[in-house]
Image (cartoon, rainbow, N blue to C red; front, side, top):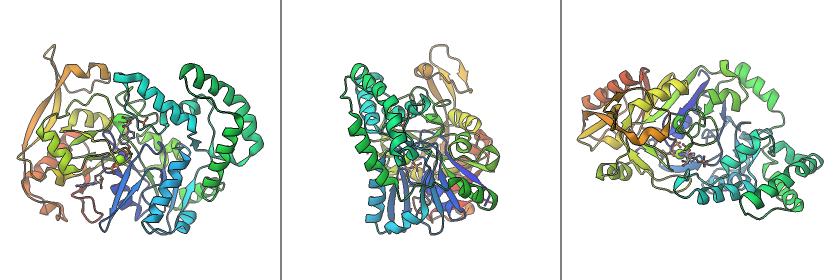
Length: 430
Ligand code: GDP
Ligand code: IMO
Ligand code: MG
């Protein structure tokens, strides 16, 4: 298999984990490159459901190294719980110790990061981002302010102590005077870090340079995306975004591989669209059709349990995702969710409600999105159960027409079609 990056191409939750798990069969090394436990990734194997947040979705195989890369941020108690939850489902703890690796360069989400995330969200009131409250924004803020704690710091008490002498007084002033939150003593943070060191110890890959070189030279690498292009901090619906780069370009940086290592960038799109959290969503449906998509699609967040907002496929933003996400092909998921709709809509342009102007170019300033309404193209539904289709030819004509039209609108090929959550419910298009 060529080196491949799997990228969420909408607002996250597109079914990336299912696609990653499938492609992981033919990979030697699977790596997350950004984000943290804000991600909720579901893999279904033989009707058994696994939820991943930080751990790459390829972990269920034998003999594949799964890495949480340098570009990720890790909340240690979430990491610990995730392993415990999967062990409770029957995977041996020794399996993780053998195959799961953590980059020493990844940043650690401290308790004060989650304190700040929670406070910021509640103080923003109606302007809140709707974050997962996993401390993502505050951890990345400290990373870029050069005040973060990396996994490797936990393993050297002297260095950690010196770093804290610089970081903590500043952080405490921020906690007290900006957020009106409780400060931490150095002893508290040292004790917290000791707890985290123990959590990470079996997994930290201090030999990562040799290992990366080995996989780069002779292995097949799969980069697992989290979140989605429209949540990208540079290209998404800013400020209603996450604090990292889910686009394909983020993979070279966050997994320390460089841009030319990647041969394919698979953009995962749902056959419709969902979003959790706040922010514009031009094709959102607030009627019974939206409710029907939510019910049939089981659209509730894996990480927070929040109901996902639902709407029809937005080809304007999708085309933009192909461009800025650096996508080379499409995996289209949850096509089966549309099985019982008589009509399926796609937004092919936006109409400005004030000027009457129709635009096909994605407007990047979200504060203007309230001015737009979708220009719909209506497709005939297929009203057939497609969950058992194994080949493209078996799909009903109306489904094929829908797929052809999406390809035409996006300008790249749909190479994978998903017709159910299970590994088996997948059509690979030649
Ligand atoms: P991710 O964050 O992109 O990995 O996606 P999530 O796991 O958050 O959400 C996708 C949901 O859709 C999960 O419950 C999957 O099991 C489910 N899923 C994935 N592909 C399909 C599909 O083709 N059909 C149906 N019905 N469900 C799917
Ligand atoms: P996966 O990998 C869907 C959203 C949050 C919020 C915004 C910022 O499962 O697709 P954050 O906690 O990152 O600061 O929240 O981003 N968000 C996701 N939405 N799927 C995800 O991950 C998400 N990760 C973050 O809901 O709107
Ligand atoms: Mg998800």
